[in-house]
Image (cartoon, rainbow, N blue to C red; front, top):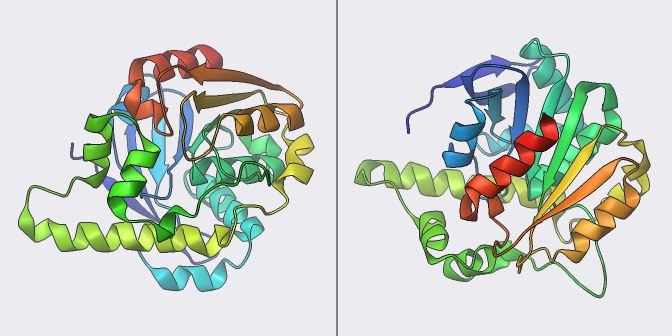
Amino acid sequence: MAIEAREYTLASGLSANVMVDGSGPPLLFLHNHLGRRWDAFLEALSQSFTVYAPRHPGSIEPDELMQLDAFSDLAIYYDDLLAALNVDRAVVVGHGFGGMVAAEFAALFTERVEKLVLMDALGLWLDEQPIPDISALPAPNVASMLSGSAAVSEALLAQPEDPAAVPDHMVHRFLSQAAVSHFIWPIPDRDLRRRLYRITPPTLVLWGADDAYIPPIYADEFVAGLPNAQKALIAGAGHMPHLEATELVLESVTEFVG
C-alpha cells in the first residue's frame, strides 16, 4: 500500500518523516519498536480521521538521537511536530514503545491530547512480571512472542517482494530497534508511573488478553494510575491486537473516540 510520506522541518531543526492520509479529526499514531508501517488498522482509521503516522526520530538518521537524550526531549519532539502540522489537539494512539511515548507526551503536553489510546504499552515495570529485552532475541522468537497468530508472525518477519528493497528494509528495521533501545535499555522504566496523574484526557487502555511480551497485568497498572481511564481486553489477541483482531480493535477505538 503506497501512502505518501511527507518531510517536515521542526523548530528544533530536526526533521520528521510522516505518513498522512484520510480526512476528519487529526489522529497521531506512534508506532512500536519494529518500525512504522501503514497497515490495515491505519487504513481503516483513515476513513474517519486524518491519520498522521511519523517515524520515531533516529529510525532514519541515527545522529538525531544525539539531540534527544531523555524522554522529555522525545515528548518535545512530538509537540514540535504537531506545531509543524498546524494541529492544536489530536487523538493520540500509541502501540508498544509508541504507547510509552504517547503517555509521556500526554503527561507533559496534556492540552495537546483530545483523547489517548494506549495499546499494549511499555513504560511501567513490575519486578514480578519483568518485560523481556526482545532486542536480544532472534527475530523468529520475537515474532512468536509478539503474536500467537501464524499469519501475523509471518507478516512481522516478511521482507519486501522487490529484492532491491530488502537491504533498505533490513536497515530501517535495525535502526528502528536501535532508536527504541536508546530510550528503554536496559528496562523501559523512566518513572512514568509518577507522572500518570497528569494524564487527564480520557484514556483507553487496550490490551491483547494473551500478550506474551507485556502481560495484561500492565494494563491494570496503567488504569490504576490514570485519573480518567478505561480498559478493553481483546480476547484471543497477543501483543499486536490491531493486527490480530483489527475489526474488534477498530470498533473499540472508534467507539471510545466517538
